[in-house]
Amino acid sequence: MKNDIINWKNLSEVERTLALSRPAISESGLLSQQVGNILANVREFGDKALFDLTEKFDGVKLQTLRVTIEQVNAAKARLTPSRLKAIESAYANIKRFHQAQISEDIQVETTPGVICTLKTEAIESVGLYIPAGSAPLPSTVLMLGVPAQLANCPRKVLVCPPNKQGQLADEILVAASLCQIDEIYSVGGAQACAALAFGTETIAPVNKIFGPGNKYVTEAKKQLSQQVNGFAIDMPAGPSEVLVIADANANAGFVAADLLSQAEHGPDSQVILLSDSKALIEAVQTALTQQLTTLSRADIARQALQQSRLILTKDLTQAVEVSNEYGPEHLIVQTDNAKQLLAKLRNAGSIFVGAYTPESAGDYASGTNHVLPTYGYSKVISSLSLADFSRRFTVQEITRQGLINLADCIYELTDAEGLDGHKRAVSIRLEQPLPSASQLTSEVS
Image (cartoon, rainbow, N blue to C red; front, side, top):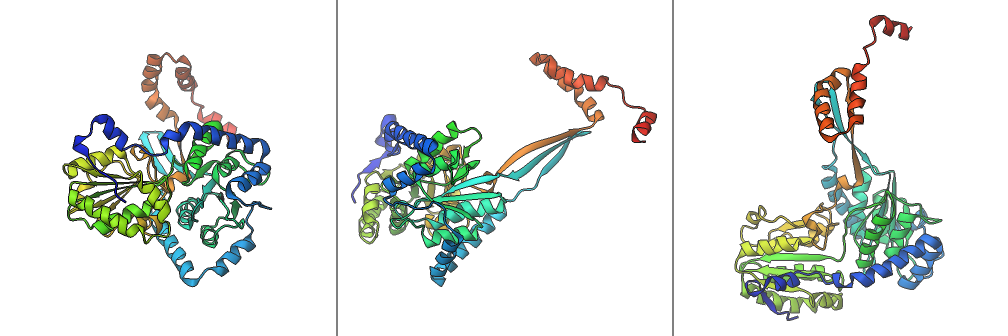
């Protein structure tokens, strides 16, 4: 692997924009049409479309969509003790971190007699999309299932593409069981997203869908959020990406391994290295070539590396500026005093600080969530958290005296906006005389 080193200071503004472009965006026109056809098919034909599309795209002819409890129990029995222990350990760490995010209702008396409350309640039904195109991802089950479980969402629906035998991986079923997910379907891709949004004969619709996926899943989620009233998505999470900031003292082998850990996700993944040291970049190039030969998914990683970027910056300050402009899904900082850069790093889904903090830890077991915004959406969208599985709403309760205290303020502002009806809704209440003590006694008796 020998990608050219890009010297940032020599690039024009147009060249800089091109250097930080995502690889899949150019296909958006055709992609939109293809996905739109799939969604329309599922909306019209329901389960039949799911069976047909699964046979077409996944190469398996299913007899049923829903996974039974017997299949889940059998999956658990097949797992080795070490594999089960690993899943349970990751579950415990993820649960511990997300449990700390549980919030209490907030109540404030903003003015005497005026009580305002912010309440939080779980979303009633959620769909959890688990990718499995080239490799099953039980870790994603935990990342979605744990916060859904802690938020107490009444209905949790998991969808995942089946393998060539029409089955889901044992690890996925066991992870789902830990998260108390009892509604599991063997269907994936854009068609699974459509089923969760529109509903079919077998799969009832949900309120919100979560989970990463390939460009088809990402596009499906985007279109469905615009087509179905009351249906929401977590974020436009698409192909994986990582950006590494490294200085001259970084371990080139560590950096190369981090880049490859994302490149092996899929051919449309993107990896970027920013460094103020040409020698470090050259050492990483050598390490990439060496390590690539040891990977079981070397062909996939090699395709992803064709769109990698190795960028030389004049200093680390410029590297931070480039990173903030790109807004990576994952950001790894391997520099001397790496924590000092945190104050300047603004746009990233998740940041990994120091030589011994690989992105893999966040993907599996440290406790943070690995469902993160891509395509630069980290500039405006947060990493997935417990709050995403709840809805917040306000409640207010005002006494007569409280309304009197607010009245002058409301009158002035309604006059300014010319909304007489709003003003009258206040004044009619205050014009009404208070009931006398004798009237109150009569009403009670």
